[in-house]
Amino acid sequence: MEKLFYDVSIYQVKVITSMITFIEIVTHPARIGNQELVEQYRTYFTRSSQITLLPIDLSIANEAITLRTQYTLKTPDAIQLGTALAYSATYIITNDRQWKQLTPQNVLLVDEM
Image 1 (tube, rainbow, N blue to C red):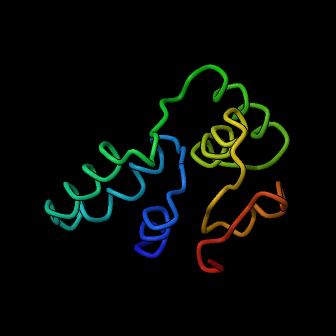
Image 2: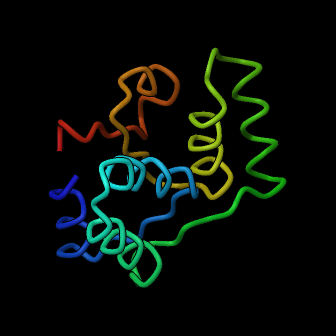
Image 3: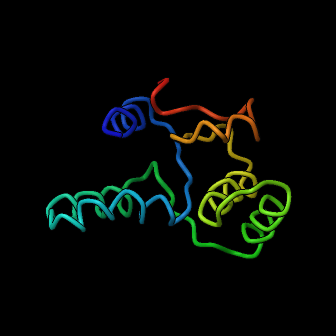
């Protein structure tokens, strides 16, 4: 994950993501009591000019519903993909190989970067 954050910073990439990303990334440090890392992530996600955290709105919800009816996706995954589709993301970055089967032209796996 650190390499991804580094690349976003160095290459001045604009990132959009749902609030699900923030929840998933911050949960582990919070669970183990690493409040310093929680605050670093919170600062990074809320103050970076390169990252926009998006709330779940009706267009994202509609995309997520469509995805859930077409594929056997869990709600968080459908929200993530729905966010990318609703905002016409150029690429989708994930650890989930299954997503390549859904939208192969847009999916970049973190471990392949």
